[in-house]
Length: 379
Image (tube, rainbow, N blue to C red):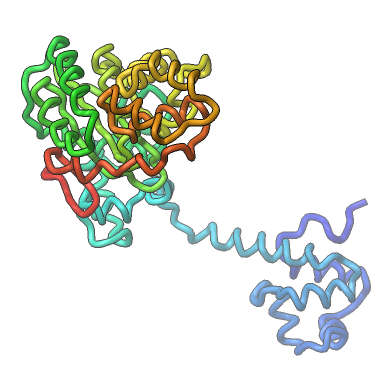
């Protein structure tokens, strides 16, 4: 048997059925509810919505849950809206672009030219240009868009935007002729710079002479990228760094890590993205991908000869006197901040000798192409 609460499209139809079942008139209901009869008529005809208060009153009268009247009201209003609603296929695209990309940050950094995020058409046009797409619908952060960038792992939209900026800048740079020999020679030259932070100013020139495009791009919110290696073509390697951690040990480890990718030819078929390159991700454990493990081992050995570091640790652990540590660094002609980073990683004690891990960005930036921290790279 059909319930009087089934198959109704509006709350008014349900109320009419309930009145019929009781033999009541609309006037009786108006008296019971202490409402104007005209108001009751408008509810029954669908011209006046059932409010939450009215639904509760109807529940008292008819022993029908108030939610039933409100659900019918919501369904009816939604059906009415569907009749006149015009769907915008670009709305989903805008939701993904404006929701996932750091648009405000990209505008502030000069990556896209728009007055603000509310300048929707201009922002979409600029994003299309920035990502080299033919239309906003083809920007590759969108799930349905064809992916043009070959990546070694899944990246976030913020990371992809950072990578595109690094590629834009690198494409405008002029450097020397690349060769395997020139890159390996650059490693030897760089190893002579580890005694003082100021020596890092020579890094951009040494890399450029080796045919490597070196760019520094300040990170964007949520990206957490430390470095990247990719190739514009078979003879044009690029190293990008964010200097997300402004420390001498992190700078040299990440730089040498990316250089090893170049030496090994990594990044030619897919961009090598190195995010959160610290802790276990900077180690040589079995859970680290082989290409990253190779780069980590080379970077650690470059920063501090690992055999000598292990011997020092075995002799002095668990207590490391400042005098002994500084003597170890002098013997290697190595800045203490670089050795501190490797010692911390080896022992798991990241509080040791932290005062020596000085800032490096102000030393390396003057000779480099830099985008960020108030500067916009000329592109």
